[in-house]
Length: 166
Image (cartoon, rainbow, N blue to C red; front, side, top):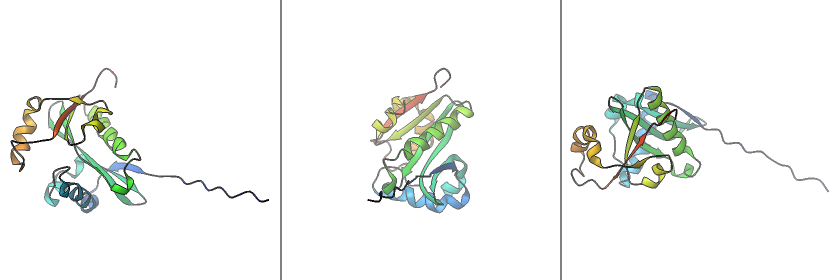
């Protein structure tokens, strides 16, 4: 009896710095999550202005996830706009995008990274701890005052702090 053929299916995903050509895909990805009120929407103009903040996860030329590290002050940055295409969730893409942003923070000498999120458990698994929004005055008075939910924000604030060599 012949043996059944075995096929090895490999999953190749790349995380890279976003390019201006990625902005439409980033916009559409974030728009879907914003429509569900899971994160803030970003305009095309805003995305082009801060495209260097973004990383994208790409598979076969398709942007399937994104995250941004936005420097808010010396030694402090925000990990924001973390989103993964629904069909690709559960594969570690979000964790890898967040890890790339934290590595970028470390490379820039930034020891504290915060998030405002509706999914705090995801970030706790990455080493973030709960924080009071009063620890983030630059965020509150920079971006938050422009938000439709201000001052009644219902997102959880969490912060990651670099320790020792990590």
